[in-house]
Length: 279
Image 1 (cartoon, rainbow, N blue to C red):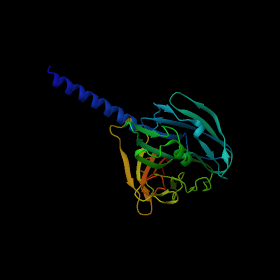
Image 2: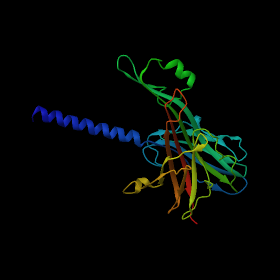
Image 3: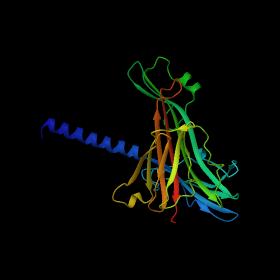
Image 4: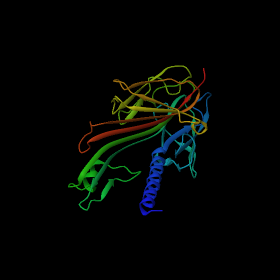
C-alpha cells in the first residue's frame, strides 16, 4: 500500500473517530424524571431519577449531582429531598408530598463564560466545565489583554413538576431570571389530543425565536429518533400537541446579543420533563 493511501486511511479513521466522540459528547442529555407527576390523598411519596445520559430516560453515563437540586412546595417553601443516593449512572431521591398543590424540583445556574487565546497561541476556557463564574471572578482571573476574547452570559435551568391533589401556581411562577417556562397550561395538566400553549421567557421577557425539542419516552426502542421541533413566536409562545401518553423530555435553547458587558452574547438552556396522560 502506498504511503499516501496509508496516510489518507489514517486521516479518515481519525476524522471518523473525532466525529463519533463529538456526536457522543453532544448527545449527552440531562434529565430529572419523576415516577409519576399527579397523585391524590393527604400524604404521598414520589421517587425521582436524575442523570446525564446519551439517551432519554436511559441512565448510561453519569449520575446527576444531588447537591445541585432544590425542591419548592405549593407554599413556595423549600422541601427536603429524602432517601437520596448517588448511584453509578443515576441519582435517586424521594419527595414527601404533605401539602396539597404543585411542587417544583429544579436546578438553576448562571455564569460568565470566556474563551480566549494567550500570547503563545494557546486557547483557554473559563471557568471550566461544570463550574460557574461571577463577574468579580472574571475580572480577577481572565487577562484584561486576552486576545480573541469571547464572553457569554449563560443561564441554565433543569426542572420538573409534581402535584398532590389540585394544582396551584405558587411554585411554578417564573423568577424573571434566565430562560424559563411560563406555563400557560399547567405542566401537570397535560393530556393527549389537547393543545397545550406555553411561553418561554428570557430574564422575564418573551424568548422570541427560542428553539424547542420535544421527545417522547421509549426513544431507545424506536428505529429513528422522532423529535418534535418548534420555534417560539414573537411572544415567546409555542403550542404543544401530544398524540400519545407518556413521559416527555422538553428542551429549549436561546441566544441573543443583548448581554450586559463584558458579555457579548446571552444564552439560555432549559430542560423539563412532562407527563402526558390519556383522556
